[in-house]
Length: 312
Image 1 (cartoon, rainbow, N blue to C red):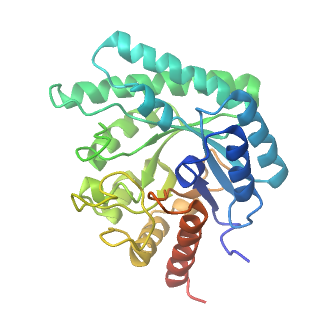
Image 2 (tube, rainbow, N blue to C red):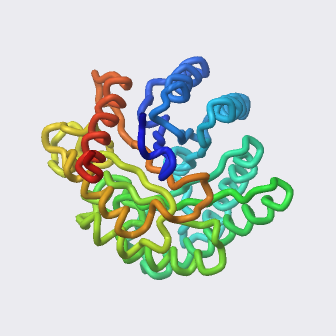
């Protein structure tokens, strides 16, 4: 039914698509709706969930043959952790907390764990902050490699590229900065990669093909979504609104162009930390919108875009 199953795995960022699922039963019900949908072969779940819930989701993923990925972005943002802090005590605290979640990831048999950098501090030297981030990422990748000896597999450590000056104001950030950091970390740690998000690229005022070509050696995971640059708009900033929203930057054609760019850089042929390369929807309902409808919107958008790239 879906021609990409042998080429890549289609995923979804659960906690973005179902932000109102807070209670355990609501989380499990919404996860179940994804796992029984053959459209999806991967799911990304927040590390903020309790161990028992993560274990239940992991077991369900094994039954459904869906790849189980964990996301530490909600943790980092909610606790304001900073992996590139110039304050060594603050940086080491962030690293230790992230290491603890690497341990949790292995306990629940997740394939990858994603992070984001700390905030871009305009009062600090950017090169110093990038060096601090490299040091932190190397510590995390090393910890993941050490744990892999007893786990039987190696956890992938992903750094997601976020906006730099608009909303989250993360250090990484602009593609050249992401390249500098990834080049240094990847040289010694093959379990490291970058997550590139189509919805963040307009917020960085960059071109998708330029970003993917520059970062091609380090891209290990993909998010697709929409973004709004119109100030005063309900969905302005890093809100991941549905496709087709008035004022949105990404439509069917932008998704199609992005898929073509992924083909050009060989993303679908690469060997990574997951069974297949993963492309995940990162979409979020606005107030008054239903999660299921926003997910259905994303699926229709993707299918139409894919048809333009691979016409029958």
